[in-house]
Amino acid sequence: MGGIFGIVSLDNCAKTLFYGTDYHSHLGTEHAGMAVLGAQGFNKTVHNISQVQFKSRFIDDFKKMEGNSGIGAIDDETPQPLIFRSRFGVYAVAAVGLITNKNTMVTELLNNGANFGERAGGDINNAEIVSCLINRGDNIVEGIASMRGAIEGSICALVLTEEGIYAARDKFGRFPLAIGKNKNQENKSYVVATEASSFENLGYELVRFLGPGEIVLLTPEGIKVMKPEGAEKKICSFLWIYTGSPSSTYEGISVERTRERCGVYLAKRDNVEADFVSGVPDSGVGHAVGYAMGSGIPYRRALVKYTPGYGRSYTPPAQEIRDLVATMKLCAVREVINGNRIIICDDSIVRGTQLKNLTIKKLWDNGAKEIHVRPACPPLMFPCIYASSTRTTGELAGRKAIRALEGKEIENPADYLDVNSAKFAQMIDWIRRDLNVTSLKYLAIEDMVAAIGLPADQLCLHCWRGN
Image (tube, rainbow, N blue to C red; front, side):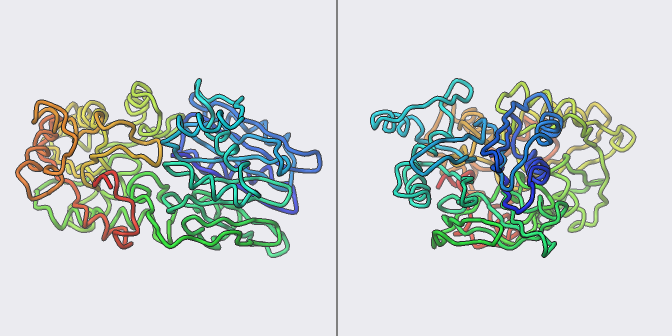
């Protein structure tokens, strides 16, 4: 998915920018960078972080940076921020999301005289495409608005200029942008971030979230709305289920409390007998705590995470890296597992390979008597077209089951989306047998929506419904 952080201040902002960007490390594993603007102009640093943590890579860099405003990004798609000289002056851009019509946009821009210099894994850098589209506007605000209209997918962007930071949430608000204000009234400073949880420890308090499609200009003097929010909102449900930090809130709704509610709903519709409930660290823990609260079955830690040096196994783009991280980071506690019937809560089953080979196997190998898997969302049936999380239909566990049952690929899996249908039951049983677990039961989509607490028409449910 990726995350961005920006700050405007009367003082040197480099330290806050460094730590604020670092608080987005759970959203990406490949690229990171920071750019500041001060008396000496722009200063930028960008590194690959696939083999090292953000703090280790940038700890020396930020100490050499000085400026009153800055932006940072952590992303799997694009090395950024980038600095551009344009007819609007010099500015820096950080943009996270997915441009699904990228090839079309590149061809159109090239045909209209654009040139591309930055590369990302051999491909054209998304931030450079965003900049080229912005430059077609009459001004930066109109350029951002037209950029969002031209792309298919979803982009949230920060544009660092002499005037301040232009912050723009994607058109339908699929991903968040939050604004924070310094708690020290004498220090005029504002921050903007994907994760509002980055504010508290840096001395900032949440002011508000940008609305869908809203564009604001941040300066040390305050927040100026440059383009009001749109009427339609479709925020990503997966933010609460998996992607977001447990300490974060989106639209005023707590991630951790939502996960607890998911677990309670799972328990209410379940009647399995077990000795304890456990969660797959980290994002499955909140769901498991909720299941324990709703069922009265005790919560215990069958799996613990070895944190140093290992990030999230879902975000790296390469399967072999995902498998390595999952293998190394989760440690089984044999003394807890041995001889017990275990309910395992996880945020989701995406591909199923890690859960099967690197989690379930560890439980069986350490003496589990029964394993009952309870994912906190319905089967994922469609790849995300707004962020770089799931990439293809074929890799999804549900689609693999359908392919095996049908003996071929099918374009429309509508018969498998009805939880009351025989085909849905067959799909779930195929996944259960493939995972090698005693039982498997998913959270219903209506319960997931209820746990989040927003109306279904304000949520993006594409991963489950395909629309």
